[in-house]
Image (cartoon, rainbow, N blue to C red):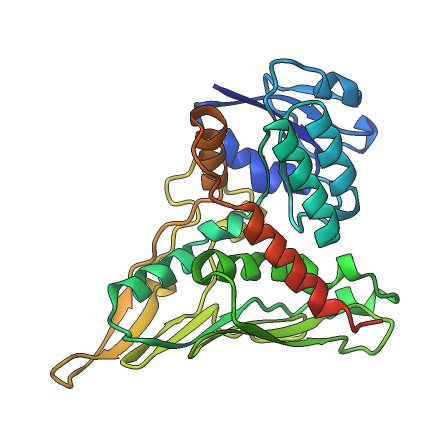
Length: 338
């Protein structure tokens, strides 16, 4: 049994972590720390201890792993505190505010023989897993270009922010999803072209980014905007023999926002209308076009991997080097903005 606790009792913990953890019989949630119980907005979970005494959580000898689900600017302090109390640590993303902080945290964990990693749950998005399946089946031929889009139409968000804070940028907040997908599958790029903008002008929030990552002949583009009234496809993959278009995103977040939880058998699962379409030419010169059944996603697989690493000594799936590379890319992307 892996016994865990949480620092933070807000949306992150209750929407993106606990619904998946509670489905796993080998994991026990013992304690959730919240600074002020008067601000409590989520229903309490039966059998879980809630406390506003952080020491109670940190000094509990039964708890092996503590999950940090707080604002980004507290990740470093809390992660360091957890490790210094000799507990493994999972940290929401963006992992840290700087690569320097990330290196310090990874170094401390290694010195203590502990595991610390980022909660990169988007590795287990249905659309991303389906793209991997299509690529590996080989019908597209040699890959030429991959386009990844994460769009919104929420102009009220950048319009309400009148200062620029790097770690509150759109690149940090959403690039940490898609960049991790790229790094986890394609590895470290040969070079990167950055187009990171403040559409409302200098001194305002970063609200747009378009990063091109090059791997030999292959270009992988990661694009996002707050001003897309009509979203671009989630993924478009081009090979020398064909293409694959997945218009819709993974549905786990959609269902979570509706409080339709993972205990439902159809949670997060694409219907026929959500399936992507592959078009390719076979060796006889015939063109085929067909729907591709989506691979099911599951954010909880981050916890499955952590269980194996902590309890059974297996290697981490989300590695230190991958997280450090992501942090360096995020820093480079916003360094010219003011």
